[in-house]
Image (cartoon, rainbow, N blue to C red; front, side, top):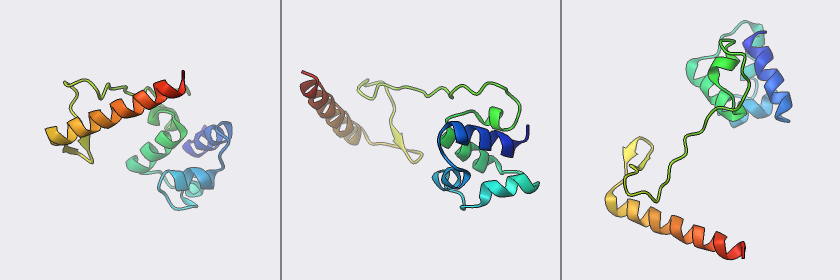
Length: 115
């Protein structure tokens, strides 16, 4: 199965057409269709598509047959030891505390809704 066929197959199971996957991945509308014409996707493109479809790049490239969802790394942002960064830049300690306060606020709202 080609990369194009794998993308098409997973897209269908996710209820998306190829144009939707391309746009959600930050690619041009017809980018994925070019992969059916012998054009190989770039590394960043295949990563973006894999993230959109929630599969591994290894699956899309035919290296791995496992279509299970990729593992998402869960981090407790309320943990003082967690280092927060945005867009590759570490966040100042004062900003981290504001983010933690906001997260606590959201959690308290959710708890009130669930009562």
